[in-house]
Image 1 (cartoon, rainbow, N blue to C red):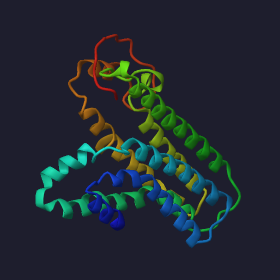
Image 2 (image 1 turned 45 degrees about the vertical axis):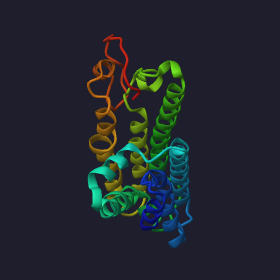
Image 3 (image 1 turned 30 degrees about the horizontal axis):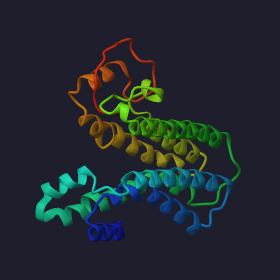
Image 4 (image 1 turned 180 degrees about the horizontal axis):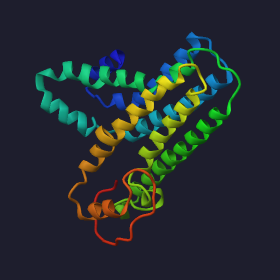
Length: 251
């Protein structure tokens, strides 16, 4: 994170922190794997799952940000923080993110702290949960990207596909994947301590930087408010039978 902070200052762009989020998890998980020489079945399983998730996320954000200026959130902080921008960026953006990353990846660090035995039924259940979350996240992102690329959808609310059943299928998938990893960790000694990971990421997405920040930017729009009334905020469920037409921002 210190290296990323230096790079961000050279580029005058703190958005690099978002791109590095997923790959940072891979770095932590692989480092633990190599340091402990833990190449058992469970170790390789969770490290593979982590690499798939982190690489996809990093590539997606890189492609989304390529050619764009700094994200609006960081621009806003750049203006608000003034002369303290460098100091606050270092601690509030990069160091804080690094600490959260270590907590979030804790189930995998616990698993990779020692070589695992054979795959258990808990591992299989955790893998099934992880795959469910991965399908929701990747499908939700794909559907949203297609929706936003269609000029005919400008100003409209994304309420088709998985987005018909939850306002945030990608966030639901993200949280579900980490609970799946935690279930896998339960087969390892001290795996229960890894509950800190999914708890923290669930809290961040549900109450801090995920859903609240996303919906704050669309609050007050008539079409989005109608979408909110008929659609589950997080856990997928059938929409309520409320029909209100209108235009708004894509979720």
